[in-house]
Image 1 (cartoon, rainbow, N blue to C red):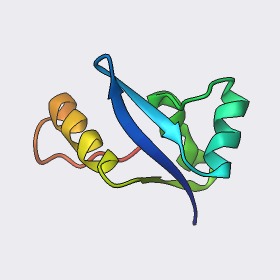
Image 2 (image 1 turned 60 degrees about the vertical axis):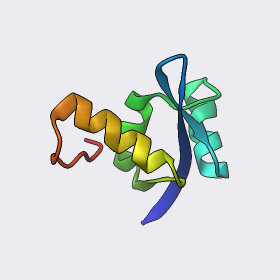
Image 3 (image 1 turned 180 degrees about the vertical axis):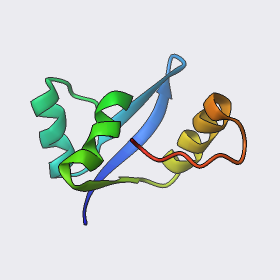
Image 4 (image 1 turned 45 degrees about the vertical axis):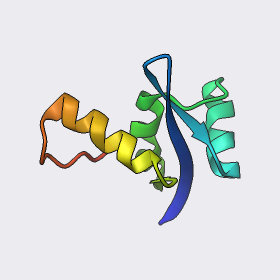
Length: 78
């Protein structure tokens, strides 16, 4: 499966996903944004791509998902 690489940061308390590869930049352009929203990240697998987080981004995503769904739950884009 082809990958789409993003870097996730917190900006003013909000999660922001920055496209790090050409595919991710193209998807952001199609969405009409410079960054990828969480909704767009959830849709990327529907296009046949796997979302890959850069170092540190996975930790941020896990922290956020633990807050949202409870520790120990596995988060997967739906």
